[in-house]
Structures are given as structure tokens and as C-alpha cells.
Length: 279
Image 1 (spheres, rainbow, N blue to C red):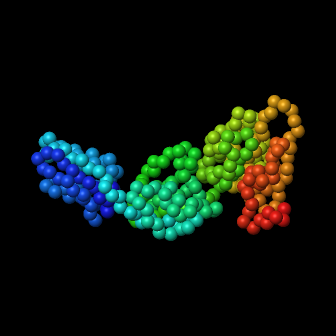
Image 2: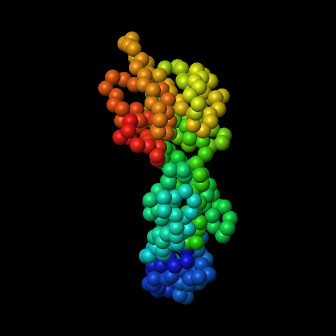
């Protein structure tokens, strides 16, 4: 609840009230003949609970019913690596996902794992969107309030993983995360993964890592992880070298029927200055 919200209040008992009350600038609502209550900053359910507890103690046998009749609009400042930074007006109850959707999302250099939420020039939380996108957790520690600022910080370590993994992609790693954390973000090894992992650095150097050592292997920005797939039928391993204006040039393994488009997607796609028709 915050300043500008409208609460519908109805009572049954000795005192009759049936009004729509707006939360005033000092954060309170004034229920006629009952009292004034500070509600701004409280979760909706907690505000209702505290008002009902007060009324039941002061007026025996009296019941009060409260509903959120109209949510106030919020003005939020979004800066940093957003596609369209600026000041946005959102309906009350909107969360960080609504704000990012209004701004066209996070730009190519922005972090999904380091989003700073500030209020009154103080940091109140650091948001990691992987908790939403991978784990499905939509509850944020602190909801948005009018006047807040949200900063999309630059991304840091980007590492790709492909092959025998359940969700191959390019992932962003935090400072304290290693190869084991990357595997967990990618939903673990697939059922056909082998026990060997190949780590390629940005210069193309390769290191072989066993699955038992994933907890100890640190990763750097630009590393590429490839996990061979096990096949019960012996067959030649097909590889192709992709070079030039792609985000992750290097050697890629593929199966028969794989298209060039799919290999380019594994490599993270074209760079901004690529000229695909000149390939």
C-alpha cells in the first residue's frame, strides 16, 4: 500500500461506515469514527490484518471489510543497460518484469543477474533475473514504489555451453560461480552426455575436464564449454570450423542434417558488424 491508493472500507456493527478512502500524503487513512491508520509501505494483507485487529479490540462485535479499490500509478526511473532507459509510469503492483517489458528489455551489454533497485538514494535490493527465468520465483524481496530507481548494470562473465546439456545457451556467471554452477544453470547434463567436458578459452585453447572436477574449474569471460554426446553406434565425429564475424568463432561438432544456421546459432549469432551475404 502507498500514497494514492484507494481503499474501500465497509463496517458492520454499532458504527456504520461505507466509504472509499485514499491513502493521504502522510501514508494514513482516516476511517470515520474509528481512527487513523498508517498503511503506506505495508503489504496489503498486513495492513488489512492490523486494522481488523484494532477494530475487533476497540469495538466488540464489529466487523470491518477492506478492499483495494484503485491502485495508484507509480513513476519509476530506469537507467543503465536498458533498451530504452527513461522515466516510466506503471500501475500500482507492477514489478520489475513489467518495467523491463515497458522499456523493451535489457540491451546486449546488460546484465540479467545484477539489477540494482534504489529508494531514497539507498540500495534496497540486488535483483537476479535468473531466479525468475530459470527457477520461476516471482516473489521479489521489495516491491517497486513510486520514486524508485532501477539500474541495469553491465554484464560481466558470459560463457557458452553446448552439447550434452539440457539447456544449451550463453549464460552469465557471478563472481563466485564456476563450471558446476554453469551446469546447474543449464539444468544439468543430458542423459546422453559423456563423462568428458571440453573447455575452450577465447583464444581457442582447449582443456579436457572430467565430470568429477566440475566443482573446481573456474571459468573466464568468453569461455566455451562443449560436452560430447554418447552414441551406442560408433560413427565418425563431424566437426566444422566457424570463423569471422560471429560472437563465438571456433570448432563445433554436429550431426548429419545440421544446418549452417544452427551452427551459427550455437556460436551466439552474428556480431553487429557482420555481413552474412559475404560468407
